[in-house]
Length: 128
Image 1 (cartoon, one colour):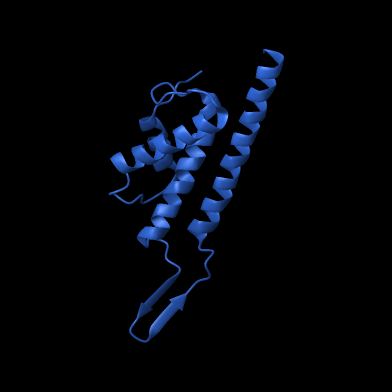
Image 2 (cartoon, rainbow, N blue to C red):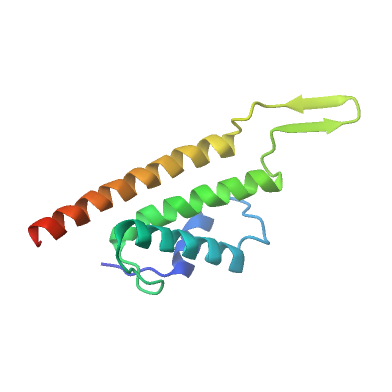
């Protein structure tokens, strides 16, 4: 069993997403990942910690971090919904590829979290 930390989760995000904005790839990303970790801890009612994250939480935390990073990329304009240069205007619908991907990954993360909640509720009830 491998134990992860916030930095290794950030590295996983970088390995899955090209061209992460430089201002977001350091402390900002670590802070965002830590906020997601706190969200998971609050939802599950447990303490996970940021330096020894077990495999049980790696997938859900990484998926939340990837979705957040895709949303940041979209806000930054790397994957914009419209471009206008003088008379030329190119528009996409509000479901840009980054937004669609972020929504799908966020949904996956939420489902993973629901499954973890079910696992912990079962273990608490049955004393496993």
